[in-house]
Image (spheres, helix red, strand yellow):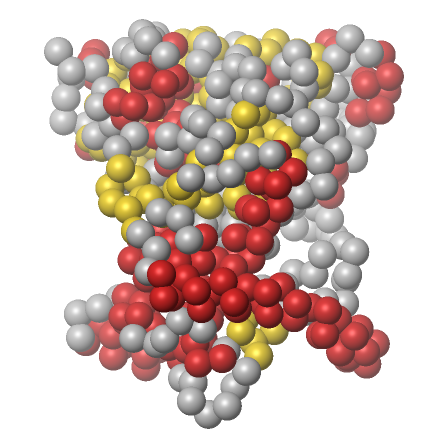
Length: 475
């Protein structure tokens, strides 16, 4: 009998639920977009009403309706939610106020109760766990930021000062479990809301980035994962809890006792790609569709014919200025009449790749390791051009995995370990993460990018003063 596993991936834009078989094949899925955030005041960014739970429940129903097998063959569900969110609950587990998004200023500050009936403070995964199981338990690996967590032991801190610094009391916090452990089982009420079987084990995972890394098979320190999302990050794993690093930060991993290292990233990374595509307007989109192409497919095809280096066009992705240089802006430099839309598009891709190569190298140097391969995930990885540019810039084989729900797959891997479908994280990843294809560097193109990277990295040295002066005039 084939056994099936459910992966819940609650992101910042939507909730996606995927049913996998024990070899990692996608059997059914459901996706429900989240409603726009509620932003009634500066710094306040909330998920309206009960939107997180409602979207997860609806996505579960869609996936279960599409599942062709016997629900009794589903043996576990892994729960992954986006990190840095905060949920404030009453004693019965209901929301005392809307869930705070990771973008809300309050999640970066000590907790202050805004209502008299507050009993618990938890993450979004803790809240959803309670809705699914009735238990006040949560994964330890989703507590980063302002929480009294001991990152060495993965337990609540024994230091009273930690509670004073975070504004939280021990009695307000959920019981912690490790990734790959059972949080509880689906209740009658949750089953009615989601379509999941009553009594199905709900399994702890980690934070969304760590679960995505697991779903891409990131298990050894010689692999770099580049996640092409709205925020682009470079990630690797290890067993050391490293504090105070300069070129990366340490997060909990998806395996007990292992950590995720995250390099400096690019804010509004793939947003820039979408922005440029949309900027071309409806006529471009209509022409692409008339030719049987998506607009992004046409851009990729056109840009593939542009030489490496985009005929001298350089894009620096600083659309959101860093805190230490608030005046900084992004740049597209080098127009001389040869370039068209394909050049701009390719230059954006090249800017992403060169930025992440530099930031990945900086992390590798500080960790004292070297990367033998690069795995690329996220929507951008569906482009062959993106994959080849990454291979040429990193001068390393770049790998694409089968499937487009890495976090859902990572959640299912955790469920597979907890329920005994696979005996270990290594065995589960080996069985459930399948390489789709790989791209090898083109030596001649790689040489162009190797020379250009030094120029690209030096651009802000020359543009900072320009943007400092223009900011004083026009903001």
